[in-house]
Length: 146
Image 1 (cartoon, rainbow, N blue to C red):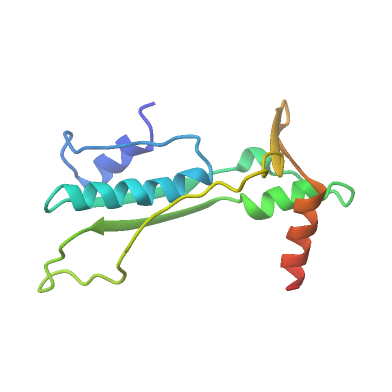
Image 2 (image 1 turned 180 degrees about the horizontal axis):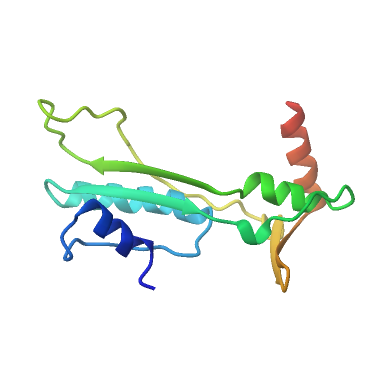
């Protein structure tokens, strides 16, 4: 530390006093949460523009394919590395800004009885995913387009 937010602030030439919120080690949970928080910040702070940067680096889960351990392949397919960024604001100045989308509302809902669908276990060789039989079946049906 300091983390990627520090480097990004320097790279973009932002003021050292720019307000930042970091959500490290949140995995998939962070993407929905950060959109909700960014929308709230933009709507409640006139003229605010919120830069959202998400990056997922799951190299710790990567290992060669094992035909007998489908969970490793499922975990790598679902939680592979990725990154995205978006600017969120409210009340755009249409003469200079060209908004592409309108974020109307945000919500997050937990799936009841989904605990144990996918577990992550940290070992010396990295993170290993274990998925339930029901989840493996759903994943395979989705891949086959059924």
